[in-house]
Image (cartoon, rainbow, N blue to C red; front, side, top):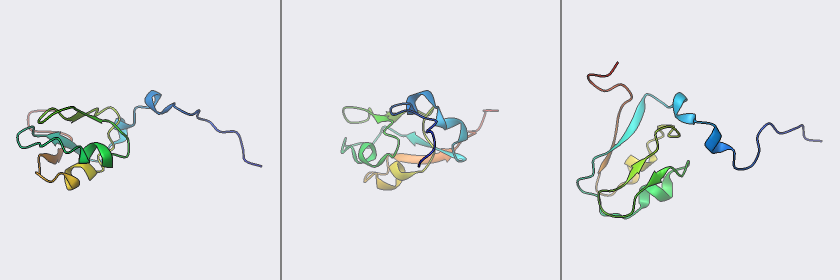
Length: 89
């Protein structure tokens, strides 16, 4: 018999996983986007939103920093940057 599950279906929004992201986060440059939505399709967390060219972004509260979006972008309009950018503490 399987033990008691501690989570319920649909509870992922209550657990902000971005707090344990890798040392990198995606930066959407919003310059060369062609709205192909490949980043939306490949994101394992389903947190990338946008409708048209140069409008896509992600919810960093849930991003794990896997980098799939940056790898698949055919226009290289997403880059992975350091979690702590210059000027931040």
